[in-house]
Length: 162
Image (tube, rainbow, N blue to C red; front, side):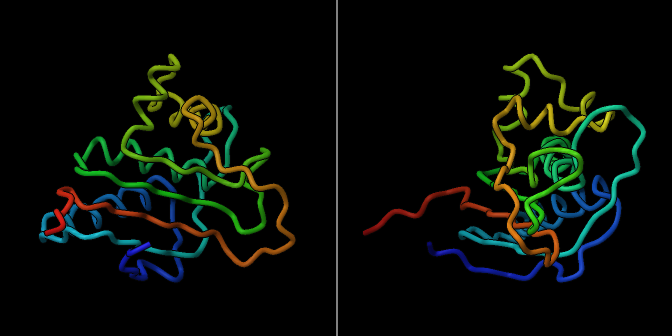
C-alpha cells in the first residue's frame, strides 16, 4: 500500500481522551516537520475511561471519538484515518470492538443531528460513532493480545507522476 510504518507506542496506556490528544499532537508535529508521505503510526496497549456519563461505549470507541474531536480542536490538516480496536472483538458493553474515524467523521455526526462533544462528555461514543457509521464491528475473534491503534496520515499534496 506504500505506507511507511512507524511504531508510535508498544505499551499505550492512560486516559483515552488524553491519549487521543497526544496522538493528534504527534501527527500535527509530523505535518509541521514537513513529513508529506503516506505514513502509518501503530500502537498497542490499553487505555482507560473515567466514566462520568450514562452513555454506551468502550475505551476504543472513546479513543476514536476523542481523536476526531482533538484533530478538529488542534486543526490537524490533510487526510487521515484513525482506528482503535480491541483484538478480542469487544469494547465495553457493546457489539463493537472500537471505531475508525477520519477527517470527515465529525461532519457526518453533525449531519445525523448529533453533538459529538456532548456525546463524548456523556461517555456515549457508541451513539456518536454509530451516527457517523464509524463503528468497528468484527464479532468475537477468539484472541486477546491488546488493543490496536493505527493512524494513517495521507500526504497533504498528492505528488504528480512525470
